[in-house]
Image (cartoon, rainbow, N blue to C red; front, side):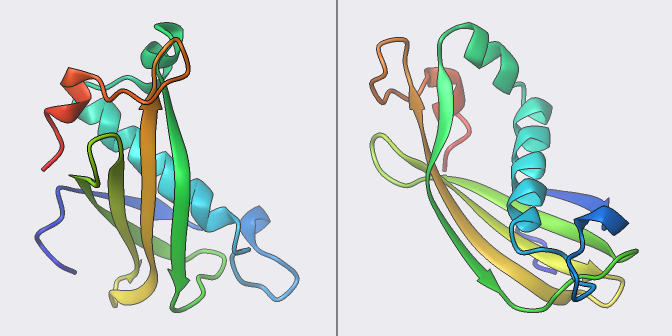
Length: 133
């Protein structure tokens, strides 16, 4: 795994996340990615729920997912994340999933988001912008 990730987080596949083929359902990967984004933001002091209470909504505007290899029930995996500015009003999470322990590439994702202020207009708060490279 690339050691250049700003953040990594390990998870386990649960039985109920698998489809009839015995592999993780494709939509579940978005849950994994979102969970890791929230854990990362909380770790750096950005509380997603508190932002919402303040009228700032962090939203996904585009999701690009390239599926490489399926996970199965009981698999352990790691998600690597980098957080970057995409444009003046957008940011991107670059996230990769690898199966453990063999580091088999599972998924490559680019999640583009923005922050909507209380008037519903895009505006990235200064404290969030401080973490964008």
